[in-house]
Image 1 (cartoon, rainbow, N blue to C red):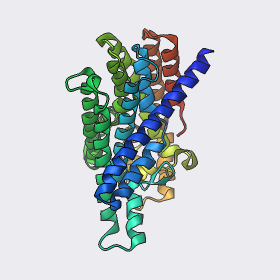
Image 2: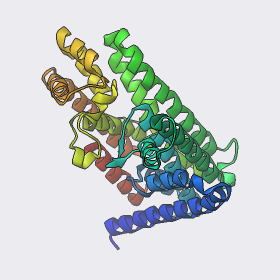
Image 3: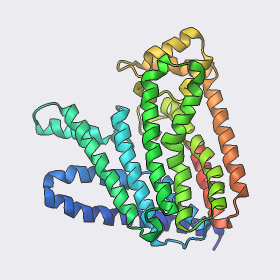
Image 4: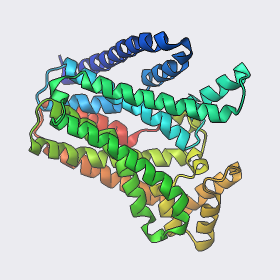
Length: 364
C-alpha cells in the first residue's frame, strides 16, 4: 500500500470513529436530557447538528500529534480526545455567533437564530430575540459541559495534573481570554492608538483562534501519547504559526470570500465590527479620511453593500490586503520550516504537511 493510500485510509477511519463516538456520546446524553423534559430536545438537536459537520481540523491535529509521538492507530484515547475537541469547538461556535451577532453558520441559521425562529413559529410570549440568545447561551454551556465529560472519559492519561489535562485546561481558558480581548477591541479600538492596532489584533487571533485550532490540539495528542518536552516544543513551533496563518486567511475570507463557499454573507466580518489584522492594517495604512470612514462604518447595523464595497476598495488600495497576504505567507513558511525539523515518521509528517497546505490555501 502506498503512503498516500495508507494516509487516506487511516485518516478517514479516524474521522469516522470520531463521528461514531460523538453519536454514541450524544445519544447517551439525549436519554438523560429527555428524561428531564422533551422540551430539551432542541438544545440537543442543535449540538448534534453542529458536531455533524465541519472540517475536523482540531481532531485531526490531535490525531497526528498522537501518531507522531508513537500512539497506536485508531486508539480509543485519541478518538475520545477528538470527540472532546469537536464538542468544545461547537460550544465556541455557538457563543461566538451570539457575540458576533451572526445569523448564519455553515450556510444555515446559527443556533441563536434557530431558537428565535422557534419562538416566532410557536407564537410564544415576550421577546423572541432575548429567548433565542438565552437558549443558545445555555446550549453552548451544555456543549462545553459535554466536552469536559468526554475528555474525562479518556481515563488516567487525561487525569488531573497530567500533561494532557494541563493543555486542555489552558486551551479553554485562553479561548475565553481571547474572546474578551476581541470584544474589547471592538468597543475600545476606535479610541486606542492605531499604531498598536495590528499588534493587538495579532494577539487576539493567537489566543482566540490560533492556539486552540492547531497548537493545543497537536500538543494534546502528543501529550496523550507520552511525548517529551522537546517534541512538544517542536509541535508548537510548527502549529502556532500555522494557526495564525489559518486565522488570517479566515479574516480575509470574512471580507472577500464567496458566500456560496464560506456559508457566510459577503463582508460579514465588517458588519460584525471585527477589528482583524486586515482591518488594523487598513486603519494604519489608509489616508486619514479613509481610516475615519472605516472607523465610522465598521460594525454599523445599517452598513450597506456600497459601504462594504468602499471598505474593500480601501483595504486593497492602501495595501492592507497585500500586507495580510505577506503575513500569511511568512507564517506558512515558518510552519513548514518547523515541520521539516520535526523527528517524525513519514506518515504523520506527510499528514501534517497536507493539513497545513489545506489550511493555508483554503477558500472556505
